[in-house]
Every structure is written in C-alpha cells, then in structure tokens.
Amino acid sequence: MNVQTILQYGVRILIIFMILPVHEFAHAWVAYKLGDNTARYSGRLTMNPFSHVDILGSICLLLTGFGWAKPVPINPLNFKNRKAGTALTALAGPLSNLIVAYIAMIILKIIMWIAFGGEFYYSNTYAYINIIFQYFITINIFLAVFNLIPVPPLDGSRILCYFLPDSFEYKLAQYEQIIYILFIVFVLFFNVLDGPLSWIGDKIFSLFDFMTGWLDMLMNVIIN
Image 1 (cartoon, helix red, strand yellow):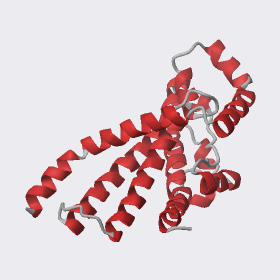
Image 2 (cartoon, rainbow, N blue to C red; image 1 turned 45 degrees about the vertical axis):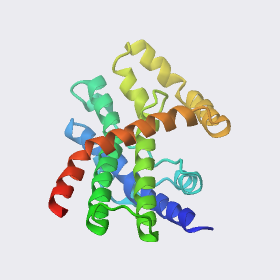
Image 3 (spheres, rainbow, N blue to C red; image 1 turned 90 degrees about the horizontal axis):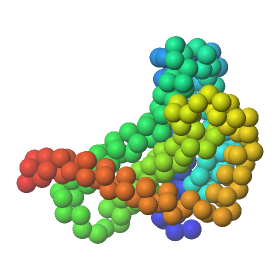
Image 4 (cartoon, rainbow, N blue to C red; image 1 turned 180 degrees about the horizontal axis):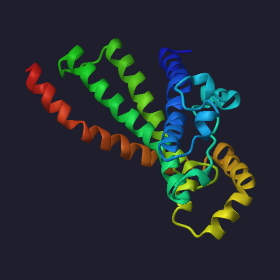
C-alpha cells in the first residue's frame, strides 16, 4: 500500500468521524430552528460522531469512498410550513458539505502560501498536504452533489417535493424503499453516475478555486 492510498484512507476516517456528523447535525439544527424538536429529543442535535455513525455506511465509505450516516429523524408536521421546512432541513446537509469544502480550500491555500511562499515546487511535503486536502475537498463536494440527487430518501428528493403537488409527494414516499434500492444497485454495480458526478464535482472544485482567488492575491501581497 503506497503513501497516497494510506492518506486517502486516513481522510475517509476523518470524513466518517467529522464530516458525516457535521452533515447530520446541520439537518438537526435547521429542523430545531424551524420548530421541530424530534432530532433534539432523539439525541441527534450533537456533533458526537457516535450519535450519527451508521456501521454499514461507515464501512462502505472506508472501503469505497461512498457511504452514509444514520438519517436524522424529523416530524414535518412541527414546521409552520411543512414543505418549506422539510426542504430547508434537507438542503442544510449538502450545504454544510459545500461550506466545509470551501473552508478547507482556504486553509489549503493559506498553508501552501505560508509553507512554500507561493512557489509550489514539488516535494514530498507539498505532495502529501495537497493529496490530503484535495481528497478531503473532493469527498465533501461529492457528498453534497450525491445527496442533492432527487431520488428518495436522498436530500434532493425532499427539496424536489417542495415544488411538486402533495399527491406526487405521497406516491414518491410510498415507493421510497424500492426506488432507493434500485438506485443504489445502478450506482454501485453499473456506475451510471460516475461521469456526471465527476463532471459536476470538478466544476464545483474549479468554482471554489476561483472563489478563493482573493486569498491568492492577498497572500501574494503579504508575502511578497
């Protein structure tokens, strides 16, 4: 096992015990702020990873880079606006991953400027730092994009239902488990989404690189 593979496994462990809890906490916190205490009473309004970790989902993430945590329970009837509250709660998880990815890119650039002064010449230290952060950022972006797919029970389906009539929403909920099983089979065994997800992920990564361009200019002025 080479160094790059070891570092990637290390990042996956970090994702399991730090980022998946952030994602689920974001769901719980927004639901709580919108009037639903279900997650709080279930012990999910916390950053404690052991409250969120799903064993099977963690093993899958460690082995393949694709995984999940235990879904946060909510009661949409507690929201003042059921559909809006459900959609905003669902959006909170993927949005938290994108925020973490953006912050990680800022930290990476600060480290690179301070450690290498903007001269990103090749060295083992530079390569290892770059691998860790780029993989960390990429997984966060992937988790956000994947969860925004409008297939139940992914977050994207909850957001989609905001724009759909109640009759369609109830029909979607009725067949949720069957749809999700078929979806996972196609994703894991046929890799039908690898291309689109990679393309979208690359575009978001480039966008974040552009959106942190202010930091490059600032650090260039400070250091040089």
